[in-house]
Amino acid sequence: MCETNLMKMARTGQLLIVFCWLCAAAVGLTNAAEVTIQVSSRETYVGVPITVRIAIENATKHEEPIFPEIPGATVRSAGGPNRSSQITMINGKTTQNVSDTYNYRLTPHKTGRISIPAIAVQADGKEYKTKPVVIVVTKSETDDLLFVELKGKRKSLYVGEPLEVTLQIWLKPYLNRQYNIKLTEADMWSRVDLQNSQWGVFADTLQNQLSRRRRPSGREALRKDSQGNERAYYLFELNKTIWPQRPGALDVDELNVLVSYPTRLARNQSFFSMGNLIVAETRPLAAQAQVEPIEVKAIPAEGRPIIYRGAVGQYEISASAKPTQVAVGDPITITLAITGTGQLEQLQPPPLPELPELTRDFKVPTEPLAGEIKGNSKHFTQSIRAKNDEVTAVPAIPFAYFDPQRETFVTVRTKPIPLTVEPAAKLSATQIIDAGTGRTVARSLTEVSGGILANYTGMDEVLSQQGFAPGWPSAVVLGLGPFVFLATWLVQRHRDRLRCDVSFARRRSAKHVALGRVHDAARAGGTELAASLAAALGGYVADRCNLPTGGLTRAAVVEQLHRRGVHRDVVDQIDQLLDACESMQYAGGAGTNSESLVQDARRCIHRLERERF
Image 1 (spheres, rainbow, N blue to C red):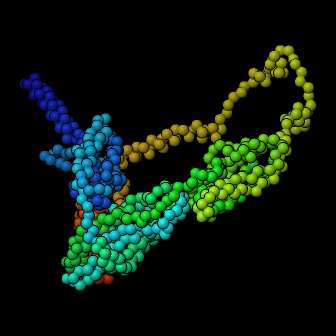
Image 2 (cartoon, one colour):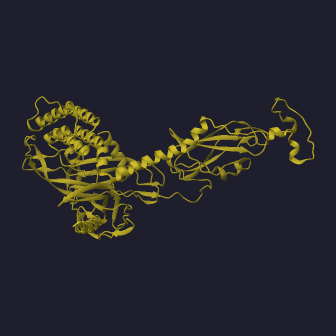
Image 3 (cartoon, rainbow, N blue to C red):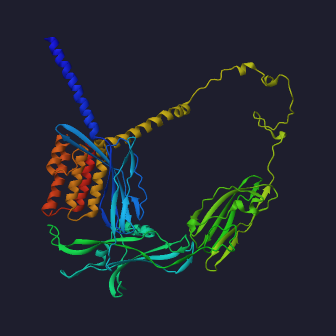
């Protein structure tokens, strides 16, 4: 009987081992790495970008995809990787799917078919390839609704000269005959797709205005359409000073403006909107800037000085030196100040190591100089050393530039700087100072027999104990290495955990994410403020408790906090805040102060952060 039981237990153990092996194999197959590609649209217009997403799933290690050059299109990274994790449970079996997504923005520049070839990705030591994708590109017919032009104040200039240019955006006002409404210039500017448009050299100008909560102001102006008829447009302008660097026709970066042009208005049926009109339907418009013919002339080669380094404009140069009384070989710091009308950022100093009048009497380093802009001048410093005591001055240093007004090269020079150079000091035998007495001694050298042993007069001193007694500085130095190693290991371990442990990463970032959502809600304001604040608190609790990302109800938030031992006063404060949000959202929130609600939400998040749950 006992033997039979033992045999049954052995068979059961074998079956368990086989079952575990099959489960492990199934999990391994389920979690195999996979690389996929998705596009936001298979059809688009010239100048209208689409989003390309490359997802790498269930890879322990992978390399970032290298997006190839696409003929007829421009591809730029739009961020990533964005990590997401999904846990599913079917029939008691738990499966975790981890995905890293890279986003790219592809902007076509011509009509026809744009092919995205198979993209290779290295993951877990293997090469995976995406499927090829074909995009169909057509031309966006603007129907004289949108014009984009680049104009300059000059018709010709030399390379390196400043040019004031203006980007003009002509946008036809939308007129709705059903409601007899014409959208204002502010409404029409809001239809411009700022993020997906390509602003080229005007990007920093526009960003500077937006950072100050300003925008290009529009005015109504008349212009001829493609049929030669005068029409009223809203004209928006951006101004910029540029310095063309290539000869030929003026060449600027891609300038492409996208607009979601309204085609229909409708009444908003939301309870809080009071039936306000909204844009119900739109059509995409895309227009590349038409550049006004402007000739950029090359700097002439005839008469160009050998020391010319590309300066264009009108300039003056001055120099100073410190110290002016030195010995042969002592460093002398000379400072060159170049003042002028050209582009100081690109201004190069005179080639000091190539000036015979300077290198004849001075040692000059050959390293390139980095200048510093101060006001309307650029300063360069260099250290030189006199070769002999016959040097009497730092010679005049020349600087060559091209004057576009006179269309000729000009060379200006600094004034010579007087110097006093003395011979280098030499140490004689009579100048040797006795270390014990501090007095100068004069002794003759005497050869003795016995070699180096003749220098020792006492063997006890030679054989005396020369022990090393470490102090606290030595202990600090010795302990610094292990400390740095431990700190580096802890930081790396923390990063690995953030990357691999999704629940830990959510918990660590919960406060930052929630406060960011509260900040965004406060900036947006409006009728959705209460809902956004409630969603921020619910999302915070979900992240701290590793719950599904869907919004938690007020009752679910309170229940989770009670279940996890959060202090009752904190739970009551959260409950009161969510109640106020519901009152503002569904009952009009009479007497509810929006600013006070935002401050209460921040305080609740900070109080929850101090709770351990």
